[in-house]
Image (cartoon, rainbow, N blue to C red; front, side):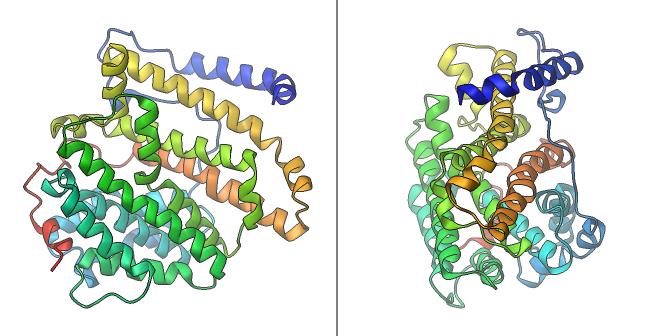
Length: 368
């Protein structure tokens, strides 16, 4: 890695200087607000040309499954604009492929909302729901399963279409880790043991942020598969972790006010404040620096990929698949989340659901 850093350092340093000129650091003692926080972002913005059509149609799927049952719920869903998020995560997808991406985003956030109330602090309730959702990975669900589980089952069925058994097994492992993370979070809240360090928190949040399943779906909508042996590459593993960590850091700043309003303690800004005795603005500035460092490393790691392809003896089609994964999967995750966090109304305090007052959402996850 030392040689790579030496070769690419001038480019990285110029990019860093240009970014700092456009984005001066906030006063460490000042009241930096999440909506005012920008990051060093060297990846160009992209969005599917089919976004407007998908946005117009996207309520049909959750409404048919009983995931959205009132006009108020539909309006709340529209303001979050999950169609825009999917169009940024899957910028080359159109038609049914983009619709699958939109439906997956709908599942993610409706499912996540189910843990904003009492279930989110009760590991037994959390496990009861995550287990019934995970059962869809093994076969058909009983009709008595809650609507949110049937929603996941439908996206999983469509996700598997055309994909190899090896790919499905890899994607299923990712999903099981994602679901298990919610039980860990619930345990932390239940026992009032918030994560003490940013490292501990990141290890858990890498599962529940849903970034890896999001990138997995890029292979499905792109109709390709990354060669399984390439996931043994330290380079690709590091690139994926950078993309996921960047997503977490950005998401935690975007959701800070909403989470503070409901008493959440497991947010990286708040953890850094407790861990180091920093102010809110110092913690946010540190997180900006962490994103910049990670993305500079990401650009350097990208330059190593041709050698990785040679090391793993990838053929032309395999290299093409990995390149699509890099651009329409990993890069799209980084930039898509960044753009959407700054557009969506989901992270405003008006959007938040007060704990214990989930209304119609509670019915979506009731396990019989």
